[in-house]
Amino acid sequence: MNDNKKKRVFSGIQPSGRLHIGNYLGAITNWVAEQHQYDNVFCIVDLHAITVPQDPQELYHKIRELALLYLACGLDQKDCAIFVQSHVAAHSELTWLLNCVTPLGWLERMTQYKDKSVKQESISTGLLDYPVLMAADIILYDTDMVPVGEDQKQHVELTRDIVLRFNNLFGETFVMPEPIIPKTGARVKGLDDPTAKMSKSSTNQGHALYLLDPPDVLRKSIMRATTDSLNKIAFDAEGQPGVFNLLSIYQALTKKSETEILSEFEGKGYGNLKKQVAEVVIGTLEPIQKRYADMAADPAYIEQVLKDGADRVRPIADHRLYVAQKHMGLRK
Ligand code: AMP
Ligand code: TRP
Image 1: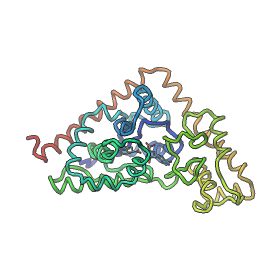
Image 2: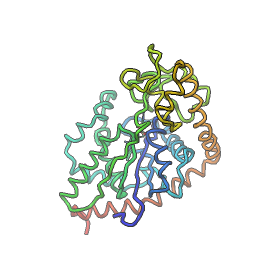
Image 3: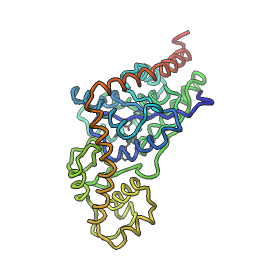
Image 4: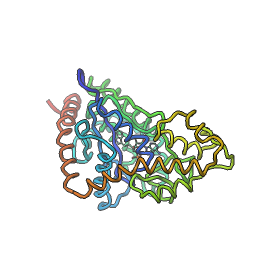
């Protein structure tokens, strides 16, 4: 459906919590690096964010903040449409159609749902249905590739199952997407607890490195990161998860090889490792923070970016929704 054209890439991030270095390494840097080769659609998935309670005013602000961060991290509007999910109605409409062909058991099996639902006092229907909305996001745009962190792979696999089922039931309607998982930075761990994924929702001080944190806060969080008492520099995810996490962040940001990194840190202590990681993190984030501040100074700018983005993708989404409705017998 995208013959003779650049392949289509689709991905999204929830505007809940603050963006951290895990989001940057697991998602955004990879989008930026390859954007010129593809036709990209990058979404701010606000409808996913409201599957758990959000403060309306804060949510409105976070949507703009995330859009500005997409741009500040280097996404170029020339190659990327950047838009807010709720501004394109087809996402919700297709979700309903897909709901009606998705067995409930498929959703109950999702590990993210199982993890999140135990943390909620009352579980919304939306939280369970979250992966179906994600499937709609992806397949509305005839997406070929979905770059995401490892934690989202199961949801893209579910999308593939839904495509297969829909196409079998109603005839060829949707393109089969592929998940693209980065090799390094795919699973950045919390600095306070290197056995758990770095997460936007943690409220622990020193858990995450946020993209908009000032240098002294970044440095403090890294210097306080949990390590071990082995005093050994090695890429050992099982035996030394804290050191491994720091080395992985360092490797992903510097693009150096494991051998190069090991010889650089050989015989030196964890304090030195942390100092070097802090310098690289701060050096990476400084120009991003500067671009962010410049663009944020004009609030009308981001509104225009988001309007342009939605206007650009809406016809693509509306067309695919129409074809799905037609194949299901809802339209002529
Ligand atoms: P989320 O923060 O869950 O909205 O995720 C946004 C994107 O960042 C997705 O592609 C995730 O897979 C990715 N991501 C989130 N947390 C991490 C992490 N700790 N390490 C690597 N990638 C992550
Ligand atoms: N569920 C994804 C996450 O939390 C965000 C997301 C929503 C997404 N729709 C998507 C990612 C479509 C890729 C494609 O990370």
